Image (cartoon, rainbow, N blue to C red; front, side):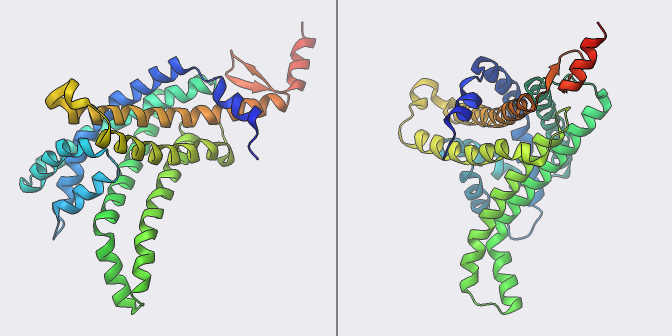
Length: 298
């Protein structure tokens, strides 16, 4: 049974105007990163033999709303037909910078949500942002390879091991499950290690599950809406695909931000029930014994 009081506490007290500003900041840097990231991934994958543009585009269509893929296909075809290592390294550098800025914006938002002032050095924060950006880029790139070449890899492995062909259907399902679990794992790591507060893995799972399922659900619903009911073309004309893509990035940022807000609500509620109070000057929670000792001094 779902506890309505807990759900009302978590979702009922969210500051939606503040969530909007946090999401907009993250979406801005994600927007800056998505195009060089696509250029980097396509340029890298283009060096792999037997690349089919249709396979790569098909993978993108599973994630990004269909009305926005026409705009992205031009980038994909350009990168595949014009292989240049300069574009590869340049796009990677821009991707790392813009993605790390997005992660840094998330860190700032999470610290604010957990009422935890940033006490780490600038270099340490940038290092954390860089590490998580690198992990994210590697994971997304690996997921793309798995989705594009997963079927061929499955055939090769099963033929080599002389396993019955019926297991190939299981493999087709498994590679999508692996992608979903990997996404959830990234959210868990992001929510646990980036804010300036010590959290248990169990304390970040609720937000990570919400962000994972919410992101896939949002992408599916928004894709269905843009393909069947939206009138962006009437309003924005030739900029329709760009607007659809930017809106999807903004909605994705909302899901990520709400994920860590859920974790912060659960964390603060649990700490208060344990008798802790928040010391705004120290940026930490203190227990009743510490409160009594501090009161005796005055």
